[in-house]
Image (cartoon, rainbow, N blue to C red):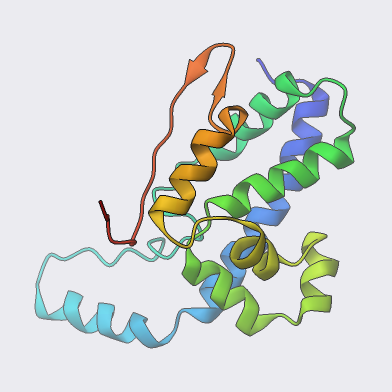
Length: 165
């Protein structure tokens, strides 16, 4: 097993953050569920996926443990609290706008701070430079540490932003 006790402790904190977001998404998804049910009933054999509304598009179950493993190996000098904060902020970078908006509609800023340790809405919409693809690309190119380490680099971008020349 590659995970240490410290990795497992960090993963437990990251899982708590993740489950809180999933609960908020479930509580906020009621209007469109009727449409999905109606569509499934109109087309026999259609599977109704109750897990389709996730805070991260393309979520994979190994994402959280991979994040924990990577952060623990690349930040050996950081405490568990610091790594937990880094993990939550890293996950915030890849949330869907819908997840952030549902969180904002459900929790007051004070409640967000108590649950997460920071204001997700401020982090997502004000501190990050991703309102359009050109500004995100500029930030990414300027900050190589954001997407590349000594082993190489890989990045994936999903955008609703129009691609401009």
